[in-house]
Length: 309
Ligand SMILES: [Zn+2]
Image (tube, rainbow, N blue to C red; front, top):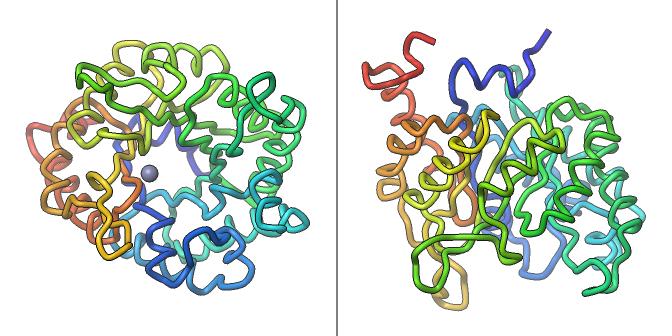
């Protein structure tokens, strides 16, 4: 039987994938359109992106279902396709691995609003939406559920509980941190610090503590975050920084770190004990390929704490 993701990463770190959103734009998705619907309307384009990540060396693929909850899909009048969109997302990722033994992480992104009393959504609405999505992902065979780009513990908790209710054997909670204006530290938009997030996730039965995206959270800051997680929890840690900062060039959003620049931060990140390393917005299969080469060299080297594991 296949080992659980949270167990296999204790033996050696795994490589995640790179961005989906920016890759969908390159493949012709227009800003503001529903990328998740492409799982049904253009599955071959989603598959082509994920195949490139597998060819570049990804061990884990995140499904193209970031905005695949009923609340998010409803904004694109796609709420009648929740189950199909999520099921197809898992199937496409599995197909991208072909006969390689990779891990498919079913993606749940934020519902994109605020909970009452600050916003219009009730907890029950969000809970129902996340449970429906998590169930569709688990039933389709996802190896894990990743609740990502989270900024509030309330929404994170609903996601974790939904993944439990869906019977997911591996649950990853991933926070998006922003560097503070004075540059001294980082926290989420809702003021959550990594120590609090790690304690909270452990308390509520998540299996992997993660961070992704955020503002100013490039490789060196991501390493700080991994260190702070590792000091707080014994759970494995996943990390997916953006490929630098977004720049608007000819009305297109381009991220400014090349694979060569980004990969410089990889060994320090692995030395902190990061268990899954991937990357978020703006990264490409070329970034992941550079990660693969450097990671393999490091894992085989005498510096690596994993060498004799
Ligand atoms: Zn991102």
